[in-house]
Length: 184
Image (cartoon, rainbow, N blue to C red; front, side, top):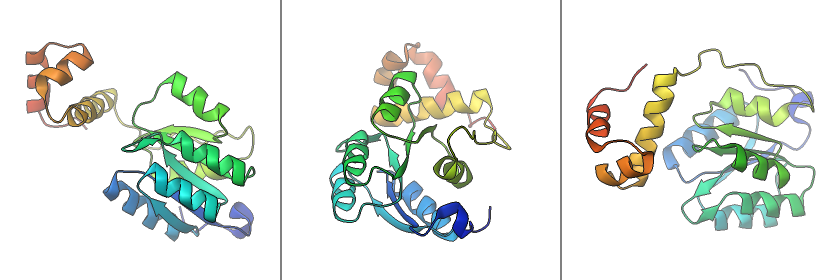
């Protein structure tokens, strides 16, 4: 997707990105800047809230789970300071309950990770009932499963037994999955 037109973004192109995954944050910031946004980033709830209070952006992309708290706290502050802001909540934990909470608190849309820049832009600029188009090359179910297992494994500090317990799977089964290469 090339740079968006002024009519797509409007006059105010400010965008706040809040995510504690620093490499992802850098890549997304670069991709969004190429699409015409004036990007500002934050890696914590505190930093995101500070930016939302000082310079409320027209657009925001906020990760749901951050190291220092819940990204919905940033969404709340942004909604108070700038009710017309378009906010997309991203998360690696796609669950109906968190999607409902995000939308109730004022998020425009909710996307599961990994979402690419095009998906995020479509969610940010979609009008009302417009649904974003389905992804061109979606991940396979095996890849989604593998990504989820890897995420839980990392969150458990690479502890196989704890990861197996949280995923409700046998430890040896998990070890076999972790020993394999990622599916396409």
